[in-house]
Amino acid sequence: MSFVKLTASTLAIAAVSATAAAARDNVQVAGSSTVLPYASIVAEAFGENFDFPTPVVESGGSSAGLKRFCEGVGENTIDIANASRKIRDKEIAACADAGVTDIVEVRIGYDGIVFASQLNGPEFTAFEPADIFNALAPKVVVDGELVDNPYTNWSEFNADLPDAEILAFIPGTKHGTREVFEEKVIAAGCEATGALEAMVAGGMSEDDAEDACLAVRTDGKSVDIDGDYTETLARIDSNPNGIGVFGLAFYENNTDKLKVATMSGVEPTTESIATGEYPVSRPLYFYIKKAHVGVIPGLQEFAEFFVADEIAGPDGPLANYGLVSDPELAETQEGVANLVTMGSGS
Image (cartoon, rainbow, N blue to C red):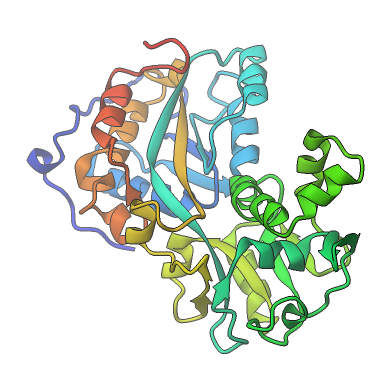
């Protein structure tokens, strides 16, 4: 992809200076497949506009990226982890155990999780969380009883859905998208169908029932995808009845191949996510290893560039690619400029 170079006066970014003492000369980034396209756009533009090498951006999922981030400090570890969820307490603890004690959390904006299917496939145009739960849960409520999931076709529990085989490609457990999918779709559907109440009535503690709500069936109807969204797209290409879970930006860049469903009657768009109307959305982040700032050339400059108004603002290239700009972007910019670390206020 190609971008017009931005003038220094337009960017208003900190002055560029190389750090000769660094053991390597490029910023290294890994993590969320949702954040990947945004980070790749910024990395390319950064390489075009600064006297630093273009950062290396890899995918692998939020959990995998944060695991690499928390391996320690030094040239053989990455500088930034992208994540489609907040870093967990156990990950912060793992970081600390490996000497990564100063972490800068950067919220870049918001994204929506969408359900999309083959353009010429069945008309999966409207979903409720209950539909996804009934399709994918190992146990569902039928005639008031919690039973092993008997459903093989969508129309069996909702006559408004196609008489098509249930086949869903969902993000694997190492992806941040999975956590949001579980929380805002599966858990919501579990409660809406009465399954949560039935589990508790059957003797489960509320905590155990909430955990059980997040389980998915293992009979081939629900398929975990551990790779990025391109793998999900490939599965749908070869399975006409397949439904996939994607980030909004990926879908918007593949509308020639995919059609999207509404959730609770709301179409996922930049506008519906920005207003909070679309129910399945989440903030996106990257995490900076402060110990690498001043050692790895261009690290802070890249981070500041990423959240600049001209990049992450509502009129920037990331918004054109599907990112919903953060209303508190100015506060984020200040935190990055001052390298404010998590939990310290400084």
